[in-house]
Length: 182
Image (cartoon, rainbow, N blue to C red):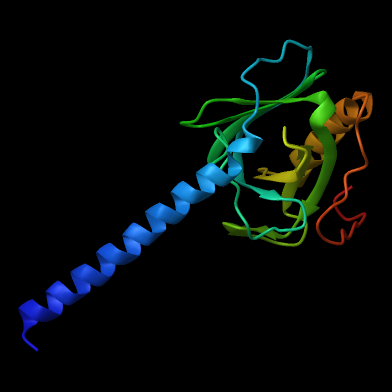
């Protein structure tokens, strides 16, 4: 086989792989369209603001390796997270902000890994919430310090119990807590 034929073969294989990847992402976007959140802003008092937080991914509860393609939460990046009395706002850089009403917020937990990121045990903060189609989902964040992660959990704890239909957040893994970070 000549070099030219070898190059053409690999270009065909690479373009085929890229085409299948694009089709799969398009199908994922259609599948998750039912989770699209209403585009109304939150107006409640600010409980806590977290700037330049690492947004990792949003996954179905119990399926930490299956990324959801929800508008505003599709891609990994830096985010500003604002916890308000009436919900949580997540603004990932380059995407439109997502507003989660307090009624849909289920609570917080921690994990050591999600699709797109693996860190030390309990190094990721999980925000449990319910989509408009009733599916339980988890958005994961990487905070700069464990103290900031605890402040996030406390702020969400102030919002979640106030929701009239809030449920206890059932994490997708077993949580281990320790007093080392306290």
